[in-house]
Image (cartoon, rainbow, N blue to C red; front, side):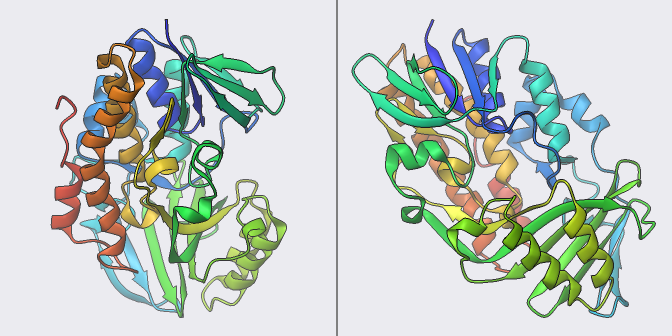
Length: 371
């Protein structure tokens, strides 16, 4: 039984582990966090990604925990309503769509619970070195003993350690899109009832949506900025949190309360809007999946769908390759790259605004799982 180490316990990694286990492989998922990460924005499961979730037997569960928005308001910098819609929201698109919007943490939990009995999980650890030879990849961990695996998959996000170890510094592949995104939770101090609020003030803006049956707010705050210093990227960085707090405090509508919420939030997150673009995703027995290899940025609205679809396609390619990782990885890239290119374009075709409905519809369905 071939062994596969997957770095990253978010969405892409555990979904890949599920499909590999179904195909008779022995997957191990290593995640540097001590457990499942809380917080995060609402994410969309769209087009062919819905088929992946259905094949996993999770579609009805996803529908039960989906967001239930009635619409949204667009505000001016003073908080006065400029426009409203009961047909669509900026976070999920048309409300009558078959697509599903769920909180990221809910999807992560669902996939973990669905795989924990058959997949080895190593929480609170991470990869620090890779040494490949003709028989496998020796992996050194930060805390656990070294082990050798047949294959190693980096599903560890925008700032992938596996990508850095196998391909080189992040700066070679990251393309900054001119802004940063912060996401955090707060009590529902606005008393929103399944209704979103969106506001732009100068070069910053935010979207606020109620979750957890309107008991909590999930706030997404974006601001234009050139790339910040590397040590500000980590979600726990005090300097970056203070920068977000200060920017929110300067907002004219609800700035003080939003700033205080950002200062106190236990799930505070902030990172660059950026894409990862690479000429190839594989080197030897190592390959990349999801944001680690082809992050489209949250501006595309397709990061989760790319993770879900990529995991299914990669597992299928590995299973069909009769133990030859070179054939598997070549097929994976040949099938996925056109789909990735279309979805990354959603973030760049209309910077600062939503992509056209036609582009989204084309991109989200431009791949067959059985090709």
